Image 1 (cartoon, rainbow, N blue to C red):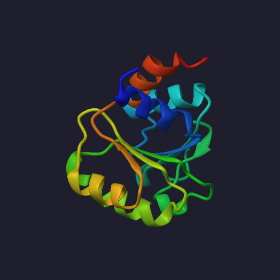
Image 2: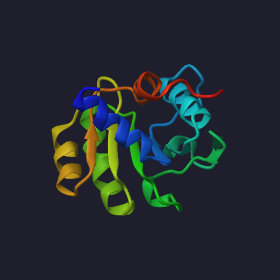
Image 3: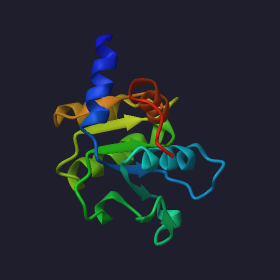
Length: 143
């Protein structure tokens, strides 16, 4: 297994709770499909989107910001424009003390966010879909 795959597999296996920034209640949105897949794969997915705060998604109440999350979070999964990523990652680094990884979805890269997360010792993945990588490395979700 290539080193990059070993690193991604390790991140996925060490993750139990995911805060999904930009989670959408719209079934046609990628974040909605990815969130449903991750729940079926056994992850707890906490949806974060101020526009849907209080609604239910992925079996959880949507929160407005990462500071509203009560449980420990292992991975921050980001569905935001690249120019907006640092604005959500920096507060998460402070609000989520147990955070281990930041995962930016396909087409999303942000040097400032990556450097801030890495400076705190977190693993960072950019420009990759967590659904695609989970399915490729660990198999399909059960549902």
